[in-house]
Length: 120
Image (cartoon, rainbow, N blue to C red; front, side):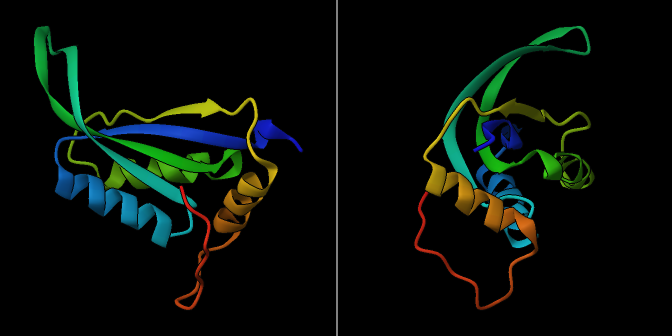
């Protein structure tokens, strides 16, 4: 199995509502097989010359390399930040059955009757 075909994409959001909307939208559009929403992040960064600190939500987006450009465009169009964090990490390994599930979930946009017992 070619693990390099898969990506874990990181994205931060300002609040739960935004995180849920983006996460659900990515899965509904077939761009991601799964999105985990992680609350409680504290981010410290420099923005427009000033040191900033604030709470955020982290999205862990499971997808394929072939969907990365679409994900970047999709998030950029909908994200409230003027510069959304979108970082893609190639996978070094993973359970082959789970990676197959990611590939299937991102191959085409899922229909209304599609369901899977796979968990994130």
